[in-house]
Image 1 (cartoon, each protein chain N blue to C red):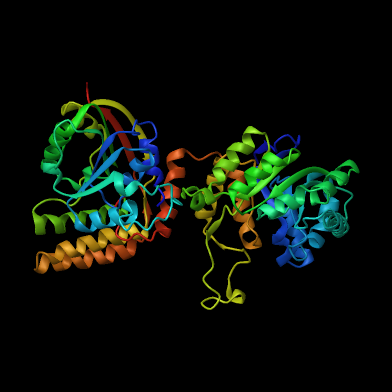
Image 2: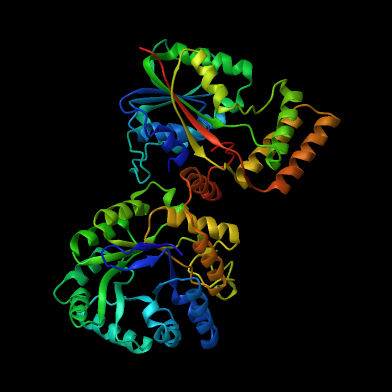
Length: 253
Length: 294
């Protein structure tokens, strides 16, 4: 698979080769692919989402062992260097001081503040001295962004269904100080995307997620939220707005 | 319009090159008007080929009128000495000019073709003779095939002064070697060889002909182009920002004014915006559903 430019740029000044890595929140496997392409000794891709685990294994892991070679920059041995673990990041199934690189690529925005704090505790626990932490995420959307309306509906549906927001966009300056508070030394900030292209596929994925969460909590308000989510996703189509940033930290020796 | 040195040729090309295939779709009067329109924007580099229908013939009158203002690129798909000479003379006749500024090996695709053009009886032998006789000034090569082959050509042909190859955000987002035209650009820069970008405005392939017959396509391009002014502008900016000498305009005359406007206004594109465009087209193309993030 092609490693997205966001991942390439977020990692290109980080020492990854030969290190054991934790990719926190595997998603579609993008950062996992980037870590492997950069020569990680081993990547533990941890996610609590079974579909994401399956997608990551399929796209990156080559578990099928079909022997096809790397026409995609990921070589045949990646299956051996990758472990996809289905687990809660608030209780990472790895020992203390065991990883040299942690990536949280587009993770923090799906963690509410309480979960973010618990996950940060785990990062500090599993990080070995000198470890790298890469945090890539989105600044809060500017006022007037149409997609902000869709995210608001997604959050409302999530609050009703699960009692917590689906998305929280933490400013770069906030996460910088937050991880510093967890013992990490800040090294640099980069702009990965500006504007952020929320494509039709992103917009419809967020719309679908809002609808499915609304359905978890039957009743009039959620029916209205589901209908609004569908309408907004159609009306918005796609929108390029906001900024995705990349932060890098180092754990003291 | 900005200009950039075309390698070691001594010519400074405008950041947009006019792809004169667009003239093929116009009557002579319209073709004349389009050339005047392009020149009004200050474009000084034109590119044509005998394969582009009547484009050479339709370019002729205005080319002759404005010969001093136009750096003329032409090309040949012939790979042999005899064939290249024949096509060069035919192009000179059809264009009605004494000399062509840049004559290019057109559409190199296979290793055997590189062997053929570099052989004793190959096209490049004819190019060099023509250069000695003053019929052409500079030698170039075009390819939308394997970047590795273009790199080989760059190594094997010492007197190459320009390369023409695809560069756009779709290609830039792919990691495979078969799309690594960035490596071609980097090597060409090292060797001070000029670089001309094609397919900057490609949006994707056309649907299969059983879904959309060729006669029902709304544009004359080989590929489905981007057509909204903002998209055309960001595609131009992206290609120009990669460091190409010049970006060749799309082959359909309906798109040319938008590209001229973009080229006239070009003032760079920052890297985060370039990545944003790569990321957007990657997702438009992506087989992976349900991605909430980038």
